Amino acid sequence: MCRLMGFVSREKSTFPQMAGAGFVDFVALSSIHCDGWGVSTIEHDEATAHLDRAAEIAQSSKAFDVAIANANTDGGLLHLRWATIGLPVSENNAHPFVYQGYTFIHNGSIEPATFLDPYIAPKYTAQIQGDTDSERYFYFILSQIDDYNGFEAGVTAAVKMLKENGDYSSINAMIMNETTYIAIAEFHADRRPSFGGPDYYELKYRVSDEGVVVASTGWPQYGWQDLPNHHMLVVDRETLTTKVVEL
Image 1 (cartoon, rainbow, N blue to C red):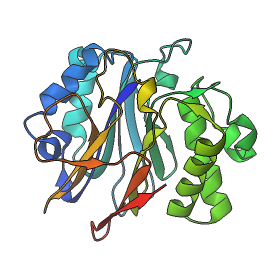
Image 2 (cartoon, rainbow, N blue to C red):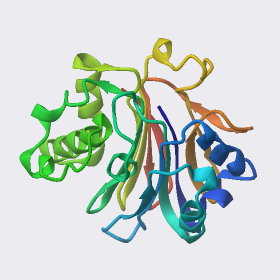
Image 3 (cartoon, helix red, strand yellow):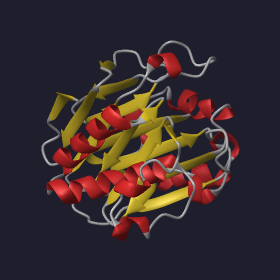
C-alpha cells in the first residue's frame, strides 16, 4: 500500500508549492509507508522522464530532500511505498517507474503479482527489472496504449480489463507523459488496510490557476475535490483543462 501525489502546472513549480503547507504532513506518512520513495519529472515539451528513487524512509532521507528541492518542473509524480507482503524492499521495486516519455505510480495490489505477464508486449517484458505487480501494471498499460494507438484509450482499456478479470485491492494509479496526466481511482474499499480508515484508497484533487494536483488521503486537503471511485481524471498539459471520465 502506498501514497501517491502528482501535479502539472502552468509554470515550473515544486511539490511543496503545489501541495501547500500540508506537504510536510504528506511526507510524514512515510513513517508507515516506509519501504521506499521516488520522484519523477517530465516537462510538457520534453520526451524523456527523469527519476530519483531509493529504498529508504522519505522522512529521514537526505536524498529525498535533495530530490524534492531539485524537482522544479511543470509535471511530476511522487510515491511513498509500503511494500505488499512478499515483495522485496529494493530500489528496483520502488516507484515511480519510467520508460522513455512515460512515468507511473500505483497504490494497491494485483494478485498474483505476475497476473499481467501474458498481456504485456515482449518489448516491455524485456524492460521489467523488479518483482512488483505495479511495474507490470505500468507495462501492461503501455502495451494497451500501443494497441489502441492512444494514451487515454489505452489507459481506459487497461483498467477495464483489470476490473473484469483481475483480483485486486486497488489499481489506483497516476501516469504522465509530456502531453497528458491521468489519475485513476479504481479500488475495493472493503479491502483497505485495517489501520487506514474508510477513505484510505480515495484520491483528491485541486484545480487552481497554477495547475492541477492530485494526491492520496491521510493529510490535510481542505477544499480539495474527491475523484470518485471507478473514474479517472484526465488533464491536458497544454491547456490544463480537466475532465473526469467514468471507467
